Image (tube, rainbow, N blue to C red; front, side, top):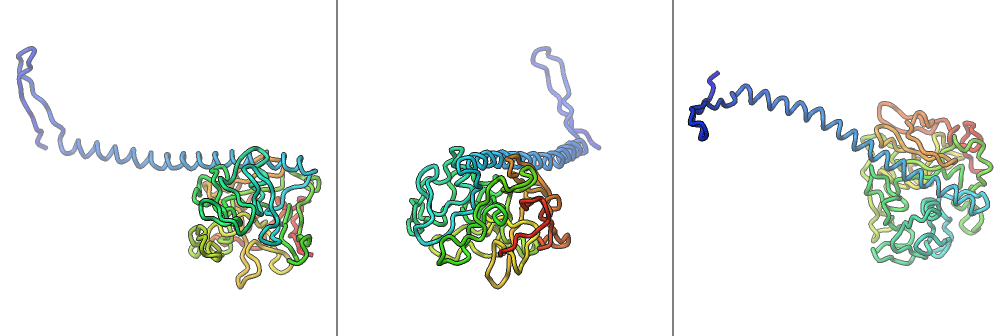
Length: 326
């Protein structure tokens, strides 16, 4: 291979010198080494970035766990419901950090105990529209502490990143809309949870897309506040995300987050952190878990989360039983 040489006179010594340039092969070797280093570093950086997001998520869940403990202490030992029940356009509403809010979710109720303001402009009525053009029953969280960093766009309080073990801990839906106290499972006393360290309270939620195979799941849909039906597609990631269904659901006598339609749809924990989902337990500690470890039954070929999992880590008694609407 021909080498490219350049000669000259050294200014200080007056001596002749020769500059030897890189050969083409040497340049290609250097380029190949750089490409190899990049191929090694990029996945490592991606893993580090993902680990960082998971760590931030766990930190936020631990904060919610602290809020859960403070909430139960402030309410005679009663745990929060997933969301205050819908009676009319004015009820229920509660005071949270920042003002009075129409039908706040468990997140707003728990995190308000540790001073985390969820909304810049909380609305006391369903009919009220906040300064962002959002109605009182579908506001977006203004505080990033309420949002998982892996899915930063999931800010809708209904289609949220974090879901609550509502069936066992507090399902405030009404059996009869004309009877304002006909709750399906009003928030239970924390003393009824036999093993608080082994009962899921809150976790990363996939929403009702869990019912569908990987190829049928649609991206997250934010709420179009001019259309009351928007952001409600059962196969969209995050739909009804604030309600977290346990692994085993009775599709006949039980309940699921997406209930009462042509297609019964259940939610599940979302393994969005390196194939694991982050959860906070009733005792307040947080951890990263696989769906299998949590008891979910998942079809390996298409990712569909089935109805026949194991509820020991969701039930109050640490026994595999489905919550049944009586």
